[in-house]
Length: 308
Image (cartoon, rainbow, N blue to C red; front, side):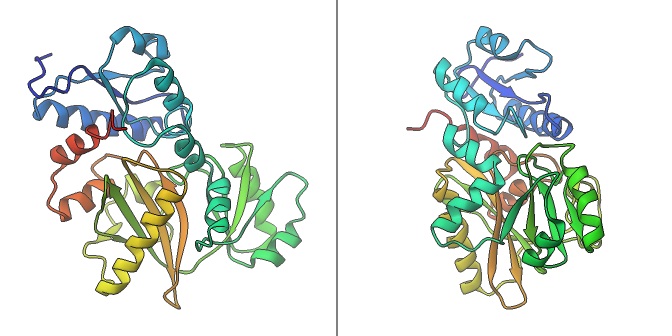
């Protein structure tokens, strides 16, 4: 390990973990570590699932932590709360925003209370009235775990008969499962970095569903930059995403996913408080289009640690 030449102090990159998104997190963390090394930082990679958990982290005495842990235990507020108790500065959103952002249903409740557009949804359980769910939301609809990311456990349901099976699949990932009205149209994602809103990306998937394979494995997924919206429309989208991001208290950096229907209306889907940083990830693509290469992006994110 070389000495830090940037004045950042001892930087620990948290990655891996034991959530369902472990493999993605390992890739994100490795990319972040490599970028920090190129920038002259001497990062320490730390996988809490294999290196003693938070007690092992505390023993490293970091000056700041770059969080590249995805999923539960990494972006749901628990890690952020522990770092607060240890008085260790960290990247990204704080405890409350992280917990809310990980809970898709409660995020939607906040947005709805503020009058922000988000598709109607209902919570599901083993004794749910499937016919009533279909009557309320229509078909197709989306079934998803409330607390998972990377599109894990998500199913598009095209018939009433398939709803129960979709619930059983989702509940393998999370005890809380929701059904959401399906918005047919174009998918956009908007990244936020500090006070800046980065250029929107339109995501085009040949299969029509931006699932785990399309996100991380497929070379057929198309990312349109510029996104193709008229200037005033992209400005409207950026303003909506900024408002949605701040509504749940997010800060530092993150990403908001949105659908645009045939009438041109935008619908907020979810917020991601620790987005992926792999070679397929969206935030680095948006940053590059704005003139910020990957290494500079990582340093900008690191600078969010320790802010007031």
